Length: 279
Ligand SMILES: Cc1ncc(C[n+]2csc(CCOP(=O)(O)OP(=O)(O)O)c2C)c(N)n1
Image (cartoon, rainbow, N blue to C red; front, top):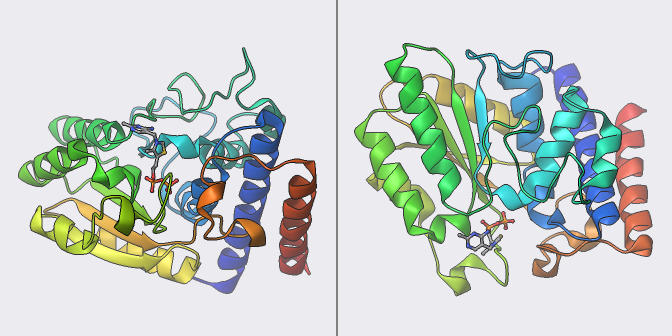
């Protein structure tokens, strides 16, 4: 990836993170930690990989993204706002009664391809979309993002078995391996490790990447394109709360909104990161 493209993606990702903080602060609830860990990946997908057009969100030939870890909707909404699906201002009414953007992704929101939030279900929906694409001879790809805590759900493994059985090479599942789930480290709650070996054993092609390095992200998705006979699992090593110093690797920031003081600090850190990229 050339350095101009990389810098541009870094800047957008920074704005996406600001949107996550803006949304959860104004909602006084929501999930900042796991939203910040996928901000770079979502930015890459919507700005450098997926065939999508905010002016034609229902295009039957578009690539799809199912946010299986639906509680991290603030990141999806923020990237969709950056991409132009709806005004950025909508983020300020996240989770407000009657507002467009509710706590978990809803298919009625422009750019959202599937409602999600009940962990384990998103990957199943994504597998169905990928199978439909194969049957219809379409060339679209389906991406789905799962949490490493989410893959403790049994339904994920039924979908994994199904996807390999039907050779869904148009399906890419990204597992956000930030090591933490709702109330502790995944290895203490109910370890899904070794994650790479499990997906390989279920018949998937497995790739690993650093979720906060656009060169690594680019390499992983480029490699995924070359696989034509099986579904691809990208296991991304990430940091929960990435980009906001006091949120990084803190399980307490799974589902807690920042107060005014924390909002100010988070925004000033992210503004400084953006300024550095713009200089
Ligand atoms: C079926 C189901 N059970 C429980 C929950 C409540 N819940 C929301 S987030 C979460 C933890 C998810 O952890 P992980 O997938 O690692 O998310 P991340 O750390 O990436 O935010 C749980 C148990 C849910 N949304 N769905």
